[in-house]
Length: 381
Ligand SMILES: Nc1ncnc2c1ncn2[C@@H]1O[C@H](COP(=O)(O)OP(=O)(O)O)[C@@H](O)[C@H]1O
Ligand SMILES: N[C@@H](CCC(=O)OP(=O)(O)O)C(=O)O
Image (cartoon, rainbow, N blue to C red; front, side):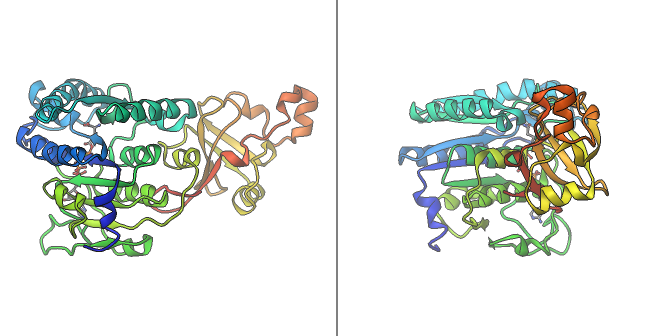
């Protein structure tokens, strides 16, 4: 075992995320044996005093069988109906499985909004902290039944990374039906090579990130995004198969180890960077892009040429350059309906005609993160 992987053995707070494919049968039923096998590993670790937050997918997949659906539905309403049925079945199974060890579980359903808005975020953190203090194993999933297409995570990989950061966990374990990240989809003929370590984006340059299997949603793209969120916040990540969970937690050389890069960005900007996409778009002229991206200044109405979308003050919006590409994301100070009347005007002029409350930036510099133009949507925070 190398010293770095040993950190998983000594971690006192862990987030473990398990994907749908590791918990359900091809017929859309919970695979009780696999749930028990995972719980055996987690309960053993709990007995050693480690606090564990379990982020579990599988609600939609577990709802397919009971609803008589042969495959995962494509439309959101049926997915939500399946999740509504499946989440109950899933949590019941975890409850009885952990009860074999005298452990209780607490169901925590979160939305992207809960991760993004400061007050919700604090609330989620307090609840999870309290559950851990009480010796409960929180079982987290996205609140699929209320999430809409625009604001949902859809996969639980990024949600798990944000929970890791929120809870100041020492490590994140991502469990899937594949035993590691490979340089290409291992299902493809010809085979692929396992990556044992990822130290930064350069190690991923030649990796083909394929789509998900039958019941999962994110595939490797969201797992790598999740790993970047967590490692960017200074937390190591191991990606491996659920069957290797015990070895991974013992620090053995299984799966792929994503090394932390040591930076600890503020929680708020981390949510902003990795929240669901902006609720609207502000189009900036060259000068405004230079000010916001180049000099890290606040965004003033004078540099905005157009606004798109229907959003409220406090919502995240994407800031687009003259070619339409999103270069930054920020929490806007005005409703979308108010903004057209402010565009191109100086704050002094606005204050003179509309009142002193308009003498402010559209987005304050402290509420802006810059976006990387790559697959991750991750940012320089
Ligand atoms: N480069 C890659 N390395 C490993 N697995 C990959 C890669 N590209 C695509 N995959 C596929 O991603 C799948 C796991 O993603 P997904 O089905 O979303 O899992 P989960 O339900 O566990 O979240 C694997 O079954 C694998 O075939
Ligand atoms: N919240 C959803 C997660 C969807 C999903 O398939 O996620 P994953 O298996 O982690 O790719 C569910 O419980 O079905």
